[in-house]
Image (tube, rainbow, N blue to C red):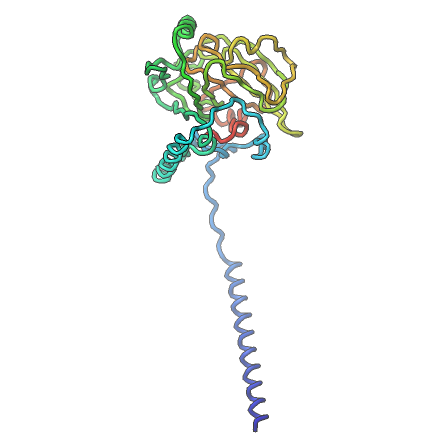
Length: 335
């Protein structure tokens, strides 16, 4: 009797195990079938045209990294301009501004990330906005609160300004791929021809006091140097060929320097990483710009001479951004 019951229990257990195996196999097959027949999600529409973002003023990393510069490579670059460290109380204020701007950008779904992150939390500088359509929106504010235009109209005005006015000791940054419609007013920028008018900035400006040192970020060779004398031009300028890696190199324009920066230098001269290439020039030396600064521009091909178009027209923007890459890949996440 006991033996018969044991046999029945074993049969029932075997039947249950078989049922479980059948159910498991059915479920797996159903899941596989569902997975195989799921319709793929449509790819999001691309915001790029020829590798270049359609909208201006995009976040760090949005532009083509044609030199393939990695974070590790950038960590080994020497600073081009040594920015002052941000004090602790300023860091606290900046953190609150960053949090607020990030929330505002999220709320407005703004395509331009203005959250002021990255190096701005470490170094003490102002992020400038030159998108104002009115030229007065771009005035430089001097110590004491006096306003002067960014670009003086004549060389005589520039000479007088350099002799009599105290310049700001603050550091600031002017952005890449910024439409500066209200700033470029001289004939150098085809200001009267709307189709040809050049307003898109294709370098980065680092505003600094007169005489501030400018360093080579890696080894290089001087490609060309000289003086671009027109009002609104670079003034004293040096172009250096830099080898980034075994497979890539670029040509960097260092513009708005002082006159001594080009003295004693020659084409073909070797430049070492960290070496002082030049210094920030005053308004009489830098093309008439009252906000003294370095114009830093990175080209993929060598220029014919000591010149590159620092601003381009809107119709030429796409090609220009593939030739003059985002300097943040060299300088770091300034904004």
